[in-house]
Image (tube, one colour):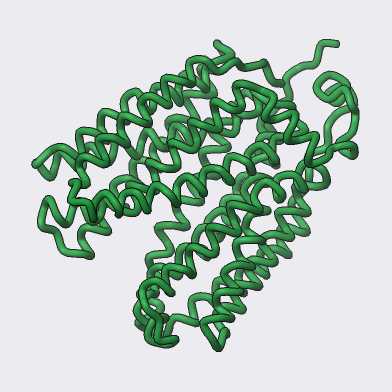
Length: 412
């Protein structure tokens, strides 16, 4: 049966716009706590290990529950999972602004990890359903830019804490998220497939028979899925290593203040990533219309160029060259972020897309947490951070070359 390519509607872009706000809140609510360290530590008389555990418990619950959140989105409704996720994590954010003990705050952070685990797989899956080959990478990239914006906006948490106290930020953004979940409940819709599309792309004709064991068998039985999984784990390890230790590297090598090192390390990489998701998404959509591997080529080009810049920015003694390296490394990250989910759609059955991305998150966060620890251990062993980043650059370069063996299928 010959099915014509669907035209991207105005509502398809409205979906991206609505979910962009959700993506911003997703990262804002999880990261904001890191900018409020001093008043939280003083309020509950914490040491650094206890404060660090507030983030760790979130990451652990988020990583472990991501595959399950993706599974529920595949089996039931993307919209319901998205609305449920933002409502619960916003309620938890609001609750965090009223906690009376450290133990209660730990429980709140764990609950946030559980609820946020339901969003990213479902949100990305819904976007790829509304945006087919012509606009899929650009739409995904624009959505991912909301995550970047959330990280950037989280920086105001420190200012809010200074002006009104640390609880106020959690209260105001938690309340906003609850109200916004009502907007999504009214205006966000699951995409309904045409009968011809169901017959062509989904022979089983239904998602009701999906099981966890069946999903695992289907996903991990695909060689290209495993290659992408390994790549994303290495990508996450390198990314978190940079986020965790590059400010320290800049402070040590260029004698920057703590504040300037932090702003420099995040600001230039984020700027490059913002440009990368837009440019990478746009180019990938154009190239995908000519080649089945168009999106994959864009992602490969990203770190074929970006890995040497990561090596370069950690090796130079010239500050401006390091800044240039940060911009190009960020650009490469954007190329991956805008194309990973669309490429996943070309690798596995469309019924398991959200679950597949959930497993990506699961292994990514486990590996990334370990890599941040390794970076600190190597520094304790008197190994210069420049050597650690050079090894990371080689790792991501080799992982990128492995993508050349990925086999893709044509999507509608």
